[in-house]
Image (cartoon, one colour):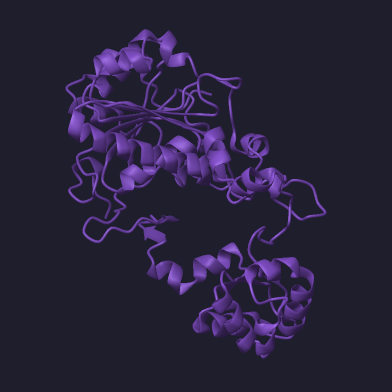
Length: 398
């Protein structure tokens, strides 16, 4: 059975109180990471609800899978913070909070008198984390940002796709997710420092900064040689062979990172002499002779069974893997062995990738219904919900 997250005793972040007033993906994902590790996370939704509740199908109740995927282990309250009474109620929730996560449009909190400076004066121990597209200042300061648009602006799309094709959006919202993770890192750093100074601080995580930070090794290459990286499909710009190859059954990805692994690859495939060929003896020389090496590997792999050859190679110490579909990943026993699929009382979700030996992540409550915990959260703090009835929607406003 699910347990009450507010009473959780397990988790490295047990006792941490978080107000998560963010929406969409980066902020909620940050909040879920904290919640999975024991924090009491109160999700504050606007009257119309987090828009990802409607980003389906598929749906369960009033929530799409998109919302369900990043909001477990949270309690939910809805407040109309555009009204003064709602702003007052938000500050009352912040009074005993350790962390405040938000992604309001830049300038909104300032207009309400709740900007970073005001919050720091009023709640000196509070760690205030803002997630935004581009930050508050600079040429793009205050502009809205969504993952795909920032993938384009940050240069990520320019290096993703086939060499002969157009720039391609990555199939997962990688910038949103990394921005959420950067927010988690920043929050934990600020909490660590607070233990010494007694003071909170402002933490900022932006989509743009996160996108630029992901350009490795493309940016270091550019700093060194001045060449603008181009799309190379599945090939790695610096390592060879590091690419996908067709087999008789499914594509196989080879990720050969050093000379020893390359020699082992050649031995397993029956061509050990390739490893001592001067054209392929080092990674630098393999890069110079990519096409001829690829032609040899294509010939060696075309009649092999993907699963069989990948197991032979991995067992011999060559990093590789079959290119699989989502259903194959979910069905893999290792996925379940690693706790990466959570099945509980009709809920299925993706497990935490962070494994701690003494205080592991726990899955204590399903993603909440809209405003499900309003009365519970307020009464814990000695607040009568009736006093704020005008700013406490009980169902999403169309």
